[in-house]
Amino acid sequence: MSQNDTSTIQALSTEVSKLRQELQLRDQLVQQLSQELFRLVKGNTNFTPQSEVSERHQSQLLALQEQLSAVEQQLSFYQEQITSRDTEIYQLRQTVQELTDRSRMLEQVVQELPQIYRRKFEERMAPVREKVATLQRENRQLQAELQSVSYRLALKTRTASHSGIDLPSFPRQGQPNISPQNA
Image 1: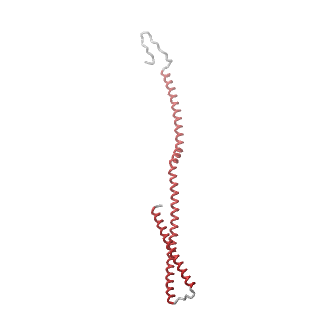
Image 2: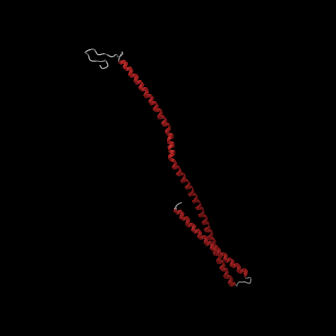
Image 3: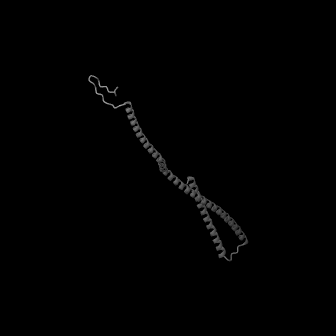
């Protein structure tokens, strides 16, 4: 919730409290006036106001009724505003809760991402590692076969170039040791 929203809610709460206090004060005054009026009328049975006093009281009563009507209108207006603001506050709180929940969920997802990526990477690398191991085995096998073939070929060429058995030649007296291989 932003600081602006908080200050707005506080201002509205203060205004609502002030209006409730005013309403209570006016309700008390109306109650006191009605009790006083009832006491005067009930307690004095011989009280018959003169026509002048009666007209004056009626005009005052009419003015009070108009004031009371205006206060009731103000009260209903403020009550509607309070209800509207309460609804707005409730909706804002719900929105804040939803955003908080979403934020927590996103934080959890962000924390889990490295593990998810590692697991996915491992899943993708398993077939690659298997293929590399297979290729390495095939490579070793082919190298062994190549060496075997090279060895056999070398033997075959050696036997083919020397058409016989290589016998050592012994030096004759007076002649240097010359072997056919060195020639």
